[in-house]
Length: 567
Image 1 (cartoon, rainbow, N blue to C red):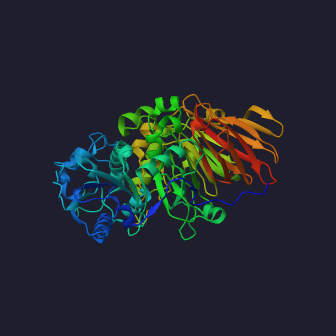
Image 2: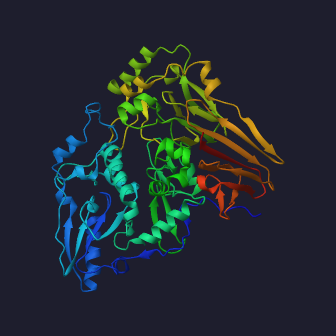
Image 3: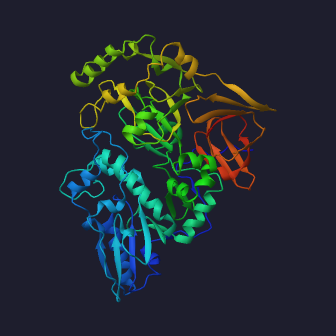
């Protein structure tokens, strides 16, 4: 069997439906007298989208009457009051997840009167709230919104011009939860899905093709489109080894599979393609994707994520912890917390991982030194308080909420973790500056409120640096559990296969996530007949509905891959 292809930056899934392109074909089914609602997130270039629709209608000699939903938002002061929290009112970085509905952002939902001789075009966030005949959804992947906010050119949901730049605090914790719930609630009603990454010539799927594509994806293994972001500590492994983002300063954060942001490309590898959010797939087919028991426990929240932390040629991550479960629910509003694991894709005995407290660490002194670092820019030796371990390749480190941790320089970590990913509560960040020259946010108060003193001394190595235990084996292969704790709802295993062997597996009603951590790759063949070749460092989701499947190594070398699932 020949070696698998290299890392694929834009994996695309073939569908039976037709992917359209441009506005001309998209408006072909519209008639005068109809109200067309075009809903979507804030970051869409709404002026270009509205102009494209109107021009395409004009080419058919159909007039258009426009209504911009953004003109009907409630006063900004009212929106700020709606989304404020007494618990985190003055917190510059965090907010509880908003529970507001899209309708709450409007003083009153407009009631346009249909014009018999024209198409009434209602566009912008919340357009579907208006009585309509046809519903389109104009989407833009979340990475564009984050880039715009970070660059100072984007605004938050309901924010008018002239009120300053939008904030990532508003984007992450208010806008995205509100927009996602709204989109998921109308997903079954959408007549056309518009991908506006090129707003002058968007690609699209009509409603039946969209739903057929989602049904197909829910029954087969799939990859989400990876995205790599830059940070101050970032390294260059993904640029050098995977060919990702060669023009970027670094490839610190590799989002392989993070459900709130990940999308799935459908269409043809060489023709037009549409990116559909993973979350829409889960919302429409929760039991097929997650499994009945996982759906009952987590609703439509896809609960596991895979991502990379690349510090090869970069610097140490901050030393931080994640919220403990009660704090996560009470303060931040997430129903489950950010338990993590670090799988060492690249490392070595001369590299290190920070993990757990030193035996009898003086926590009062730790707090004083952490505060001085923030307020007086005084560095300190974090290893007085936090242990380090050799970052041996293929070691898994378990990181329950409340455990201080961080990757050192020169590593590539595959994070196999619970889906929440925005709650790194920093104790110490090496006095690093952001792009504006200001010290990066450090959250000493939150961090010490969540610090678990039980994660200290010998208990850290005993409980959080586990040795593999073989669960089953066959001729030329074995499957080991490499990470499992009672308080963590997911489990991590590793399968090692010699060349020319094969192993049978089954989802048993729960989705699996696979990643090739050594070797050329694997071929996965599902009982349904679906086949997927997965290369080194790629991540594959196997929906619960897939059931039984067989895995074979590609190439002439042994292959190792990890598997995670909800226990």
